[in-house]
Image (cartoon, rainbow, N blue to C red; front, side, top):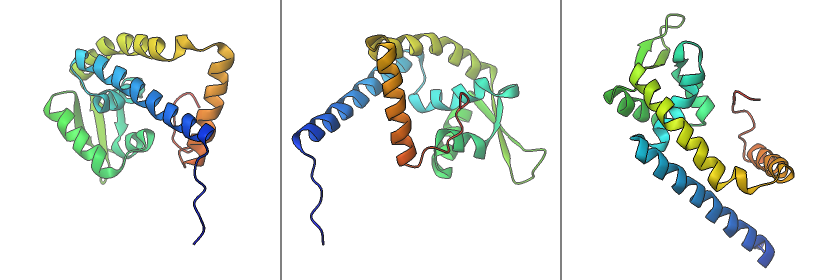
Length: 158
């Protein structure tokens, strides 16, 4: 068995700083969404639905877009359907498929939450960086996502 390649002090500092940054951003975003009455997973589902034609997507496409497994998307959609944020319907093109449609209530919550969500992202990240740093962070994030196998997630701006 080979000895693990432990992190040196510089690498350890970077890793721990990254973890603190990730957690700090997540806490700020969760806190802001809580003020809007929805959870982070709710918002993650509602945003792509709000941008989709007819505010409707196939469940499998939504799960792929989010990088979620079948169980997680199923449980999340059930909770959201119970609260009237989405509805699920049979797919007319494929009897085995299910469509997710954002309700008017889901859309209204998304529209109310989005401006404060963007303001939070700006406050805790974007406005702290120069344009060059934004480009550097984008390149790093894309390289890391690719190495972790998330290069195939279909984001709308790709």
